[in-house]
Amino acid sequence: MQTIQLRKFPVEEREKPLILVVDDQVTVIRIMTNMLQPEFTVCVATDGGRAIEVAKNQLPDLILMDNLMPSMTGVEACKILKSDPETEKIPIIFITSMDDKHNEQVGLNAGAVDYIPKPPSAERVRARVRVHLANNRQLAFIEDLAAGEFSMLDDAKRMARNLLD
Image (cartoon, rainbow, N blue to C red; front, top):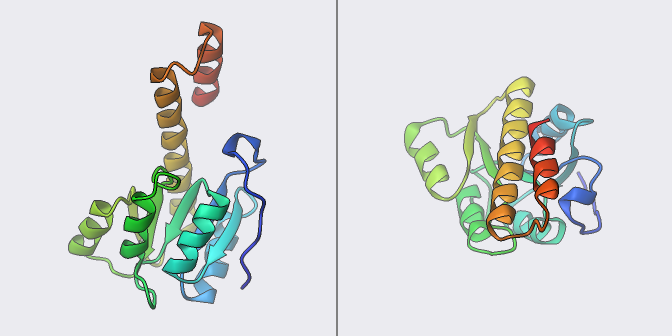
């Protein structure tokens, strides 16, 4: 499966949120893509190193990543992404067959926001993606507000209303 090449642009200019799906199994990538489309735009990577490259180039709104992959685990890729100022705020959800408390804790400690065991249901994946996208937009708004990005109170109110819709 090929990685979709998109030009890099800010989230607010996207028609739909961009989700990076990372798994070394092409079948899983196809299943995840079918779960997410047409609500989301999907780009893919088949290993941790390529995931880092795509994330830096495309700045996806969220990453769904397997943990067990050749050459670099999802946890290792997550740590690298979370240590880079350009990608540190991208929410990462692990979708993995490693369904135990220890591995879940390791993934969350590495910086992931959620952990979904395989095989996931389409409803669960889409719901969790929506929740974490909304959380990230709200966090960005609060950070902008705290940094004084809104010069007018009306601008801040309008943005807050948009986040609540």
